[in-house]
Image 1 (cartoon, rainbow, N blue to C red):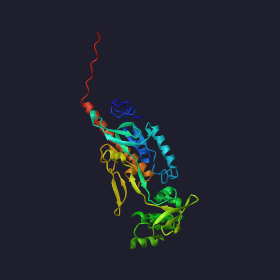
Image 2: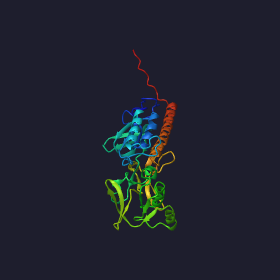
Image 3: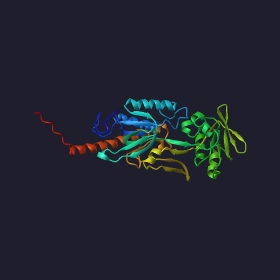
Image 4: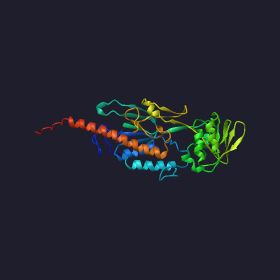
Length: 354
């Protein structure tokens, strides 16, 4: 374990006595979440010789997808392949990764200048950390239409940059469930000339929006969508309440993006609603530009705070936040070293032999 020290502050590496242990129950940083953001932050911290523990709940948002895209040098990799490589890199620098979930976190009293957090795991065990990095991602709340959840990540999609190329020139339907539906239709029109916007339960678009859709040949279908049709394990159409089935090969939806923020909530960290055109499209944990949250000592990175971040963006955020956490720890290490330098502990006198 990099830069590990015992719980009483004895060093085991290149550190200067900061009370961050890795051999016992103490860590410099506990990273909650083992996706791209969490692993990237842990990698930066491990390379900085910090004692790091990653608690991985094993529920990556992109698990239903077959491939990761727009990740330079890794385009087309399976999500599991990318995570396996990241885990190997983190552990290669002395970071520790465990499978499990965090039940809660509690701030400790600043006794003897240690402070930090006690992190309780759902298996009943607990660990301690000087800092927390929350990288728990988000949950996609899908429209309640039969077939959507079953086909999610396959031929039910939401992001043109993640999946647009794969459905190029196909018959694409956009299921309107929020204010971004027309925008999604225009984005997917870039990859296919056959795009249909299903209004479902959303209101009729205004005159200007209708003109924009018509100008690019995007068909608008009125009526509630009751299910998706599947033939031979492939999406084949969209069924309306009238009974009509409109043939489609892929369907685009607009999930509500809900931050996984239970850990932060246990510390009093609240989420914020993200609104577009007066409608809530998700919740996120607000941070400052360095990733610091409103709770001192707690940082956040990835989709838990940036709902629109793709995998490569989440990884980049993890690196940036990991560096910020390390800088904060260094500032604390310096303050403690200066205090010890100014007030050295008295050295006990050796007993005199007679």
